[in-house]
Structure formats: structure tokens, C-alpha cells
Length: 290
Image (cartoon, rainbow, N blue to C red; front, side, top):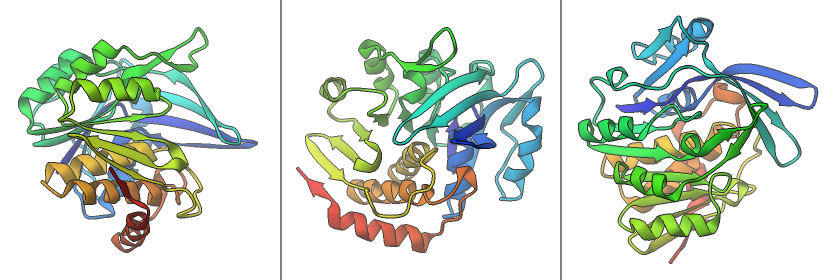
């Protein structure tokens, strides 16, 4: 089982004149897609009562909802995500409360921590590390800040990231979160950690103990919607490595799942192991090692 910690969101996605509303956040995307591959997810999240309409989407997929805590004193975290030609802009519309240690009981051995609005503190990360065996972390929710109109910007504190890395076995960042100089600075502090940088259609890079893997994902499939692909990659990689799978295969598999996710709209796309294996075979032919 894979625990997935972070706020579940209500996303309002705008593409030109088209507007779509759906559940979002890593607990949604990772659960909906990994479940289709036979991986048992456990979303561990905080939502408001406005999320009740979406809970059945989890249940019909056989996803355990016992750890989706519905609170009456906050609305669910919500983002307006506006897509342009090759970019997107995020605006925070609502935010549920931060995680407290008492929210994180009976955690599985392997967890992915994917916050979206700075809802996980370093103290909470310290607790997670102390009660689990393997931890993957997505940087995005630790680096986001919000301007006076609640639009998302990024502000990275290398010292905070270095401390965060103490509690993680795998850490994933996006080119939207860090520059290459910052990425290299992060790697230099903990060369024994598994660090991944995602670069959209340009694929991703994995660094570990002086080894470097790079795979390009451009043109593999007809991508419809990239939202959630980074979440799925982090969760899949954490799950595989938490099981002790080979590093190279885990890297390819997690990229293949992320690519497969882009074929579907929002969290409702349909994938299977055959599709993922086909994509993985194509990615293997593009893998470079250094």
C-alpha cells in the first residue's frame, strides 16, 4: 500500500472558453491512476464539506476513503488553473488547514508526500520520517508562495530544502520549482538521495550517487492534459523504490505512468498495464545514462 499525503483539491481548469471542475491534488491523481495498475493507494488528506460530492468517485474505484478527513471549519483547497499555449497559471481560491501530527496516524511503510499549498511543515515531515520506512517528496507544495491576488509564484529556500531532504528517500522537483543551478546545489548536499527533475515534454532527469539517467517523453503519445502527471510520477517512483525495485526500471516505469496519465482528461483517464508497458518500452529506447 502507498500512503499519499497532501491536500486534495477542487480544481477549476480553464482552456480557452472551456471550463472543467474536478477533484485534484496528488491524493486524487495518484489514487485514480495507480489503482488501475493494481497498486493499492491510501489517500491521506484534509478536505472541507464541499468535497462530499466527489467522495463517490473514489469509492466506485475501490479506493479507501477512511483517511479523507472532512472538516467543517474550512473549505477544500481549490485552484483555478488557466492553460495558455505552452504555459499555465495557478490561482489559489481556497485553502484547507495545515496537517497536524494527529492527522497522520497508522501510516503505511511507504508514503509519498505531495503538498500543493505549503500545508506540510518541516515538523510534520520529521514525524512522517520517524514512523515510516520509505518516503518520497514532491517539492512543489513546499516552494509555492502566493501574491496579493493569490496567484502562485515560487520561492525556494535552499536551507529548507536541504533540511527537507533529511526526511526523504526520493525527492522530485520540477523546472517550475527550481533552476538548474538550484537543482545542482540540492544534489550536492545529499548525493546519496534519489533526486528527480521533471521538465515537461523534455522528460526528466534522475541523479543518484553520481549516476544520471535522462529520458525524453516528447511525442510518445497524444497528450491531452498534463495536470497531475508530476504527482503520478512521484507516487509511482516512490512506490516502486519502496518495494526495492531496480532504480533504472523504476525511473522508466514512473515516467511511463506519467505519460499515460496525460492521455486522459483530469483524474478520469483510463490506463492499464499494457499501455504503460508499451510506453515504457519506447522510453527505454530513449534512455541515456551517465
